[in-house]
Image 1 (cartoon, rainbow, N blue to C red):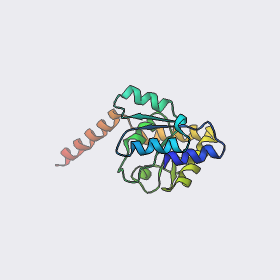
Image 2: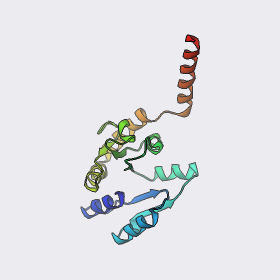
Image 3: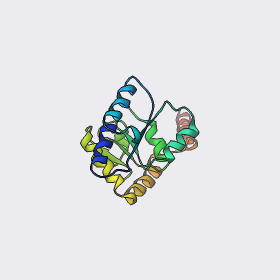
Image 4: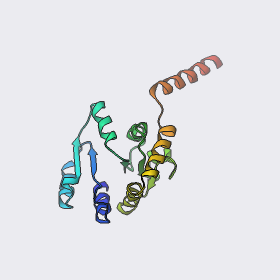
Length: 164
């Protein structure tokens, strides 16, 4: 869906749009072929699996926004990682990660279609101020440092023990 959406956005005149696709899996060769067939080979970077945190930070830093079109992941930690970098995310409405996104407030929701995803990509490509606003709100509402999470869990356990 991402590759086809990028092709559509580029065809509509946003010729500077490109994609960085991180990960691997059984469909990787089909995705590479699709990018080649659509003339996007020079505009699509396939990184493969990235386990190095520093490299992931570099990839997030190279992005203007993050797209996570999964309809089956229960809660993509990658959306939280993107928000830590003040990147707005586009996720599928009704998906696990979509439950954390307030559409137009801290990210964007799309339907599970190329057209809907392309429209949201165009919205962010065309308006850097919206990207910055959504990214800042994503950072303040979606990201919680690990230390804060650990402290919160500890306090919860302590209150349970006090009641027992």
